Image (cartoon, rainbow, N blue to C red; front, top):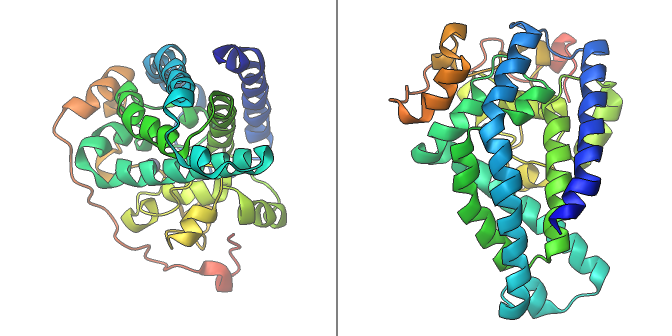
Length: 284
Ligand SMILES: [Zn+2]
């Protein structure tokens, strides 16, 4: 089953990554504050342990759980016996919902925030931020996401299919691509888009505490955690107490979760207020 990820997922995701990177250069959404290639090196280096764990531990473990579950028959899809297509759609939706909840926990539980913070300290947001995850976050997610796979009763194939979709969506919504606003509005009705996720990476606390969804924007709408009315050029990316470039080296970032975590202190509200539409600044 992992071979599906290697044979189809890896080339598709690599191609998508290259396309997004080229598009970011041509149609830039937010102005960069840090040197682009310096960040590429940092984000890739930080991602190496997490990436190895994903491929060698996370995916095999999740597929193994789903395979074993055929015998255990735990989970919703085993109880309901739905038609195959409906079952596949329900699995994707519920797995995505579980990842919305996991992302909320990453922000709410101090022990998880230690690790997720590494991702949020990026001073710019682009497709390489989609790789910038501390390996500790990957290890922590095994228990939650494993439990979700069992409760949902996801099949091994759907586990791999969802993982590919999850990685593709993560690359897309972190990208710094300026899409035509009308197109992004239509897309955002269904899925998380770059402007929407950009607000989640803002230094303003209440903006970071919104837009947690991964693939479908529906979960933020349902939980009223959606926030779209912030113009992108007003968004300052990062965590206010971790805004010094010299402290964000590869070595520092890998050690960061094991240091004393600084509380968030920064602007509680945007001085210009929300909903800048009236002043001619178009938002989603
Ligand atoms: Zn986050």
